[in-house]
Amino acid sequence: MKKIVCLLICIGGVGQSWSATAPARAGGDFTTLRQDRAAYEEIVWSKLEKHQQTLVSAGRSFVRQTWVVSPSLNPAVAGLGPTYNRPSCISCHPHNGRGQPPEVFGEPMRSMLVRLFVPGLDRHGGPRHEPVYGDQLNEFGVPGVPGEGEARIQWISLYKTLPDGEKIELRRPEITFHNLACGPLDDAVMASPRVASAMYGLGLLEAVPESDIMAIADEQRRENRGVTGTANRVWDVTSRRSVVGRFGWKANQPTVRQQIAAALAGDMGITTPLFPEPNCPPAQTACVMQKNDTHPELSRETLDSMVLYHYALAVPARRNQDAPEVRHGEKLFTETGCASCHRSELKTGNFPEFPALSGQTVHPYTDLLLHDMGEGLADGRPDGIASGRQWRTPPLWGMGLLEKINEHTTLLHDGRARNPLEAILWHDGEAQDARERFENLSKADRQAIIQFLQSL
Image (cartoon, rainbow, N blue to C red; front, side, top):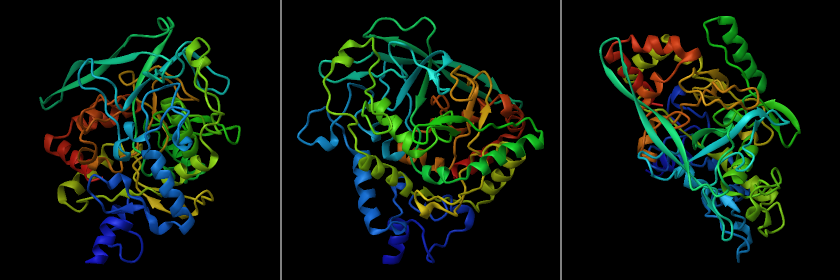
């Protein structure tokens, strides 16, 4: 009995006692059999040395921590603001999972933000920020600093009739801004709403060799099926050079470390060694004049612990993968062309940052590449070499537990899709042929693909 409990709860499937088949091992050795609400939070303790276990525990506490305004009796958790969206990581990533958009107009964005940008690129190829409000709208401010304003979503309904007559209601978001503290937005401003992505499995994706990602792009071009993935090139703050991007909706961050540091800076106003300057555009005088502690507010050691915690997270194993309808759906998923971008298998290379992630065969269902997804999903925001119509293929591993863990089923970058069917129907551009093949299947076959996705 103790052995079974350890398999299901503690280790999550490492070592000789793991009995799942290879396809179920979504994260290789970093896989958990848990299916409860803590499945996205499982740590693979058996892959950690004793001193790393202490660091991971600390990193977990910082991810769960509600940060406070400086000065504080506990300086280790101080530094919130001057402006921010939420006071903790898990406010936007509940249980390390996905955020969701508001469902009705007037409801605040609790796990979602709005990127702001104007035409052009900055000196490193990133998007140009709105001159007064910066890269994203921060709704809240510390005492003495007003929040920047509020963004509200109104859903516009669209209807699509499939070849067999089934009628599906889709929706797209319309963003409006209210109570702006520093006057109206720039006339040329554009906005892109984004929900928070899941946090598990990121270390495995960082450990995939850059050469493998480029090889997948070359393979797609040679196949000449209309799918032409592109690896984003983005600025790595640490190495001070342009490298392949992997994280974020447009693959605009190169490493887990930079992804975390950028979120701390943009979402909570917490400075780190990577981004040591407070997020205060010059026009926001109250923000600029706010007295803060010495920057960076977060030490390198604290950031290291948060990175290691992300590296140590497990990916949920597949479920019901041998059920006939799931196997049939998996076959159709490949035949329709979905697997061209949602690649079932990747392999990690040598990863000195955390050697336990090296040499893993994983099943994330992504190619980590950018693809033109058509005008319907376009946000107009360039980022690196990503165009306003391109998005990184999101990993699908663990999505079958989304409803159980995060109590919603919304998908895509802005959460407009309320279920996998709607998400598929929004695919266009390079995915148009695959979507049309899906639409022309029988309803039973379409449902088989959905059941396959729910097994991931």
